[in-house]
Image (cartoon, rainbow, N blue to C red; front, side, top):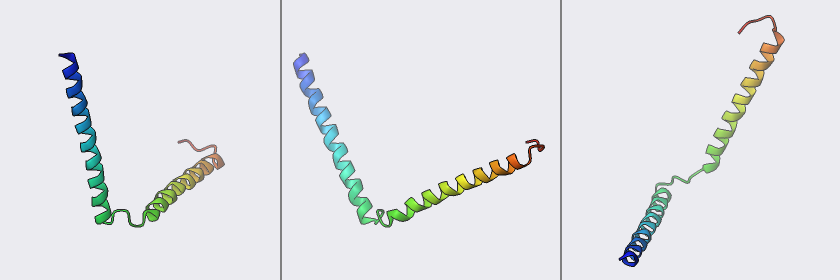
Length: 73
């Protein structure tokens, strides 16, 4: 009986793997058809510049706080 259970489990795992693979392929085809991969570089630069703005703002705040040591927070 344990051998049959192992074989059934193998078929279930194989079916699950194939199903997930087909789902991934379908999602990829959907994204290509809906043009979701268009201009990926723009998104990269939006993230980059927003991170850079936060870094500049935080450094300016630290500079302002250090120039006025008698101020309390």
